[in-house]
Each structure stands twice: as C-alpha cells, then as structure tokens.
Length: 224
Ligand SMILES: [Fe+2]
Image 1: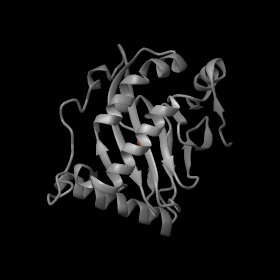
Image 2: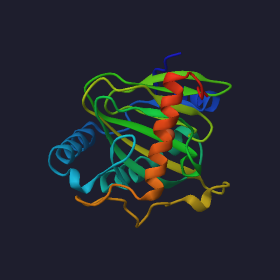
Image 3: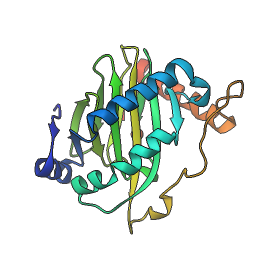
Image 4: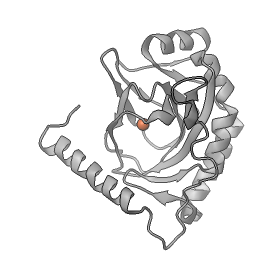
C-alpha cells in the first residue's frame, strides 16, 4: 500500500487507524526554500560543522532542525490529537548508496516526523508492523508522521545523489517517556573537522550495523 498525502480530519483519522500518515502543507513554501538553501550551503561549504555516521552526513540538534521541531509542534499535535513535548531533531543529507536499516526508534521518538526538504529522485520509506505494511515517497515540503517506537521502518539504497531530510521526535506529555523531552538540549553533537566522527561506542554500533545489513542482504536472515 502506497500512502498518499492527507490533510485535516482525513489525516487525523488515518493516524488514529494506522499510526502513520503523510501530511502535506506542513511548511510554508518560503520556509521550505530557506531550508533547501541552508542545507545546500552546508553540503557545499560547511560540512565541517556536521558529522557523518554509518547512515549519512548529519547534524544532530542542528539549529535549523531544532527550529522546525518547535515551529511545527502545534500542527503535529493537531493531527495526532496528542499533547506533545519536543525531544530531538536531526538533519540528514543522504548520497548515492546510503540506506537506512530496518529499525524502530528509541523512546525519544514516540511520535516521529520525517520531513523531506530536498531530493533529486524518489526514495521510498517503508513501514511495517502486525497491522500496517506501507511505503511512502515524500516530495519536498511533505512529511510523514508515525509512531516511531511501534512501526518498523527502513529505506533501501538511494540511487540519486542528494536527499535532505529533517527528522524530529516528540514524547507524550504525561506519558512513560516524558523525562526524555528535550533529550539533546545543550548537547549538540557537531564533530569539528579533523576529529574522529564518533567514539568507541559509535564505532562498535557502526560495525554491528554493517554486519546486520550484510546478514540481511547476502544470507537472507534477520529480515525482521
Ligand atoms: Fe527511525
């Protein structure tokens, strides 16, 4: 099932039913153009301020992605009909060959939002659990909203050369993970040029991720 963008009450109903919905018109077009310009500048001239992990070039807690996290919160609350607290944001810039392994998110992403900023070719984000099997292809300015720690999600290898997303999460006010709100506040994870991009924990995580992907691709196991 390929999901289509929805608005208003149709979006609310779809989220209640499936836990995942594409939301259109979440960003003002001028704000979208501003973000496209900003991340183009980062990619071409300011990579030193960003890090690179096992998935893609990225900026955890990037000032601009934090601004998105805050400014669209009321819109997300309206669609989900939930009282939400901001928890984290990250900007990710994908290149040819990048992919995202099948996973569910941690507790900071009870409600997660992937917002497409820029792209040069289509790229499906797949969702699956016992109730739902869906895939979405987002245009710049569209966002997919989903229950990050209930739905498995992944992307196959990207065949284009530029795909920019802002990914941000919320926790439920009064919920089990309320204490994870503002998780990364004051702890930006920029990696200055010339320094290792991640420490021992990140190194082990990256190796385990590659091993898992190898097992999935070549041995056909760990497909869940
Ligand atoms: Fe995720």
